[in-house]
Length: 395
Image (cartoon, rainbow, N blue to C red; front, side, top):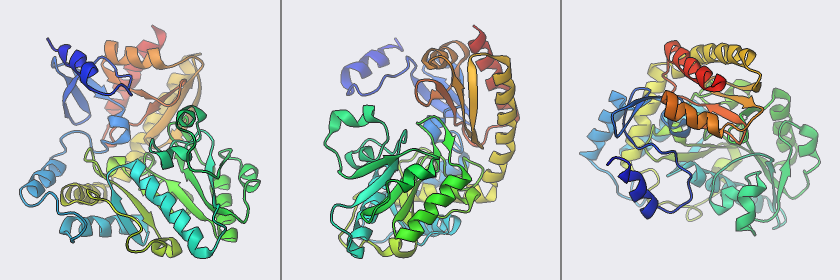
């Protein structure tokens, strides 16, 4: 029986996830198919990972071709795909140096190490402080968890990295009040994802950049979810014209292959030296060949431009949906990272959409539905999604 996969998984896998009762077997474009052959419209993209959707031919070919050549050598040696992917990523991000990781969480760890090493190089007191944001999410490892602004995630694993100060997102005075001679860095998402889809205001982001410039602290922008064209710019900070000292990226960079990166420019690009950081798998030829092709496609197909167009259409349709339902109280976001806030918990709505309408949605907190579909969706896909979600809301 197909559901035996669920019972087998429950018996074998560590119980850290509350999974929906569906077994996905394959994907194509913006559609997923379960083990019974049923089709689902995907507006979650594996949590903003499948930017080009499923089985994008050129991505598949890049992976297959590299498998036939070389999969892994370690970072004791150079490899061609890592060099090519690095050059392309640096060009589109306007940064100076990149370090490839296996995930977004690892990218955050590297960014935090740059901040600490940079502070050490400057001769700051050893009890460096890092300012993070309330309601932020940066990952589950101990370092990333330390700067995640949700006590529910942190408390079971205390004590974490010390000297983390949490400011209120989009409140510049809150950040100013925490700055001191010990401040090594400010870390924030350019658009908060898990915290409810909150874009930074221009005043806030430019103000934080100015504070960092005045004090020598580094500005770290987490673009793991909102980067790779999801906001309508290749990286969300480019919309504001505020360049970070360090940036993290992952998710859609590999279109399903596990790769992340932290990038730096200026002093931050030279803060760490030989022996300060490493990774066995990071930047291996297979994932970098895929990332290199993904970056080519984003440029050749003008994925950011497409996101701006279809993202605008999604915005208008969600505005209309909000006007039609007294359950929806707010609408936020940019491009194809948008959220609808409800006055009721959305868990049942998301589950009903999946099981009854075969529509894949994900939440952002208890009361927000997050729309992070593959970036290749069309207006017709938006129409279908809104129709399906509308039926669930009024049910």
